[in-house]
Amino acid sequence: MSSNNKTVITNAIVFSLHMIGAEPRSSRRILQRIICSFLMMSSLSMQFWYVASYSKNEELTDLLDGLSVILSNGGTFVKMVIIWWNHRMFFNALTIIFEDWKNLDSIGRNKRFMVDKALMSLRISNLLIVAYSMTVICYTISSLFISNDSGEGLLVSKKKLLLRMRFPFEVMFSPVYEIVIVAQFLLEYLIAFVAGMFMALLAALVLHVGSQVDIMCQELIDLPNHQQEKRLSMFKSLVAQHQKIIYLGECIRDLFIHIALVQFLSNILVICCLGFLLVNSLGTEEGPSIILKFLPFYVAANSEAFVLCYTGEYLISKSDDVRRAVCDMDWYKLNNRDMQLLLLILVRSQKELTLSAGRFVVLSVEAFATVLEASASYISLLLAMS
Image 1: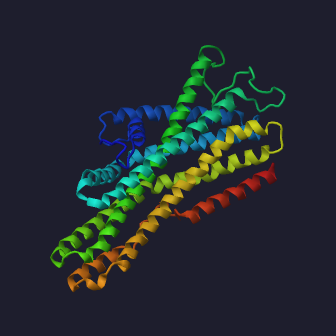
Image 2: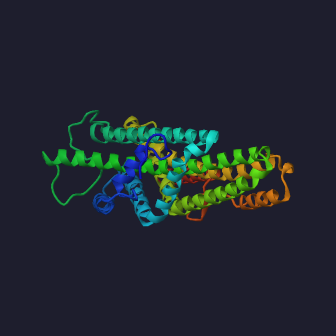
Image 3: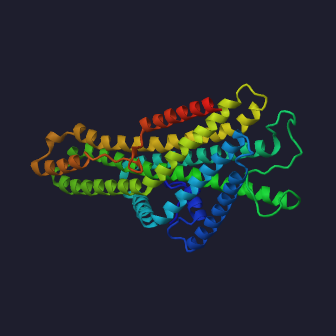
């Protein structure tokens, strides 16, 4: 599989797929998966070990900090495993997309829809890279160089780890400490990059479906203006195109149905934990350092939930576009044979293309509002208990 900035699958997405062993045609994907699994499981096990060992001695702020990172990193690892498990379905979806881009020149003037969506996908990827990079950088600066203890001030000399982990060996002496800090930063940055590219991948797949729907709708509207002899072959082509769109939409739905569930639940818990930490720090002396550390993380978690839900809303709206195009076209100019094919398209479009979180929640803007509402309720509960 190849990609460049002229396709909806950006270079950053392809790089992340290669890195985690999810690129279907990579000859080293098994080795890459083993390495990723070892790194992720080692990191998560040492973080769990730390939380289990010091949960009674740690303050609530530090405990929620560790749990938030575990939930975020653990969710990313689960999504990687799901992509590996559904590699055939993922390969089929990518094959359809790259075939469409291979035939771009034959689309004609309507190819502008695909080019516009590719540009939008590139912007989303770049925005997510910047957002997640700033999150990791701010978290690193606050964790290593800014103390939450108001008596110590800034730039404390006490050695601290970026991620709360318990190691089976001593790490607080040079050069082991420096090596561990660099390894933690690189690992956390790569995990954040992969998490961002999962969101960019979902957006790219849905945007491609949207571009194909736009092309189909434009061809439907223009269809009555063509000569009657050409309409039958064009109608058959549109029926096949619509069926391919439906199949691609179902592949995306089935591929992300469990990923979306993991993302949906982890976002609620992470937003709840971070929201409590931010609200609880307001008016305190250590508030600025806590805000610097957790606010970008909080914004990133909300952005993940928004992108996830908005892509579902976008997909639903594209199903409505097909029905709207059928109503807007000059259907009264068609003969009976053409009307039968048009009715076939209309009947198929009655079943909406959707994304769902484990078949429990249909992803939409309303679902995003539910996430915010549930998170606010849990934050209020934690504040009442603290």
